[in-house]
Length: 207
Image 1 (tube, one colour):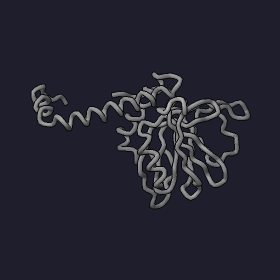
Image 2: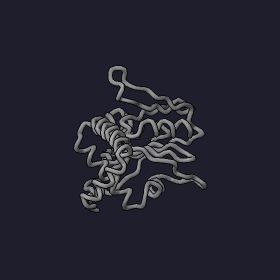
Image 3: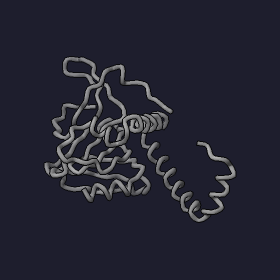
Image 4: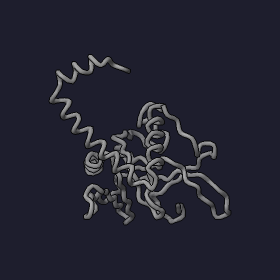
């Protein structure tokens, strides 16, 4: 992972070695109550089932982007645990990035960013001021002096620096969808493997 390419939108955050590994994990209703609810809401359940199938399919495509399904699944569990522990995406966003006065987080989307070394799993945040990405895992980086450091891969683009948001897909496999972000000074970033692609695209275009 190259942090010395003079890209003004790339940021890195060093982390203590002790935090580079290890992830936390963590209502039963009676069968009769569940059966009654299903009987009363047949059509609603059918619609919900369709949505669940679509969501499950999106999850599967999201995990397949990673070279390791297990690593991707663990990353998603770790992120979900972190969001719950910190009290929501807003708190995680505020802890991860510098928040400007009056800035409000609009939404957060699980995805990958394309890099020279392959796709990096993380979360894309869209706020009222910026578009920002942070990797779920820290990466090992060697400085010019040979010192080993662990850093999160971060991208921050202020909305007034955005020139275009372009959707695209793989012609051979339309389920592989991408979003390209282009800045006014010619830098571009590719995001893929969204669990909620349409919502993310709509939010980015509106931003």
